Image 1 (cartoon, rainbow, N blue to C red):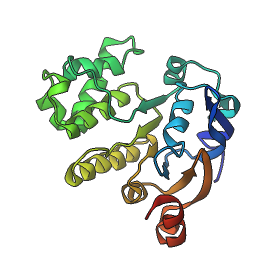
Image 2 (image 1 turned 120 degrees about the horizontal axis):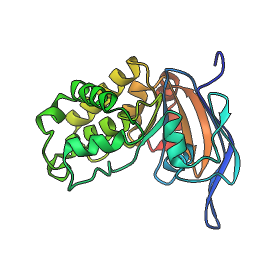
Image 3 (image 1 turned 135 degrees about the vertical axis):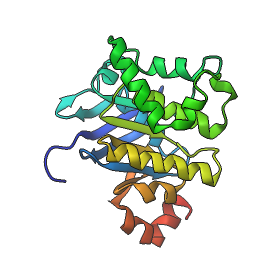
Image 4 (image 1 turned 45 degrees about the horizontal axis):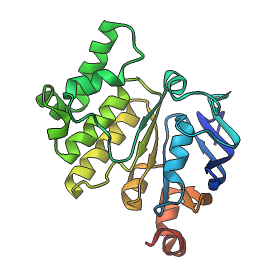
Length: 239
């Protein structure tokens, strides 16, 4: 990878109580890339995203963003440095409107004008949300809630977007739309790390991917090579 990566995890270990969930994970994400983390349930993919975004504290190793070690920072400090995390199962606030959910994504922004600019961009990216602006988030379809969750994360103007299972529970048509949006966001300059159990969806957008098993990275390659590696697909991904 040429130059300094935007994000680097070096021998990161994370535990839940006495149970070690990550066993020395090392990955790199370059500026402007889409990188996929793939593997079976419980492999450590979501834990890796939580460690990056400050929801979990590593017990060892370093998490470096553009040369700065962020492993000990609180989650709000990490958001302020340009990382947004869109969690699994969306977690929109169901009793708040689409507009109110988006406002919460920009809570660190103190300029009303800047917030309005970001809101306008969100509705340009997701026209369906504009149609539902005053609707309660809990009444949206699953696909619309996923769009809202991504749009809310983008309201913080991140340079790195972490997406956890963005196609979970969606119809194939809606999943395809979500991944189209991911490509578009990336083309506008946002680096993306996506956790996705559907490896074909993930590798269709990612330039390269890391394969996880039981808290460790067991393989790393460009997407095209991984899709051709039938032995690896069967061994680690059930392909």
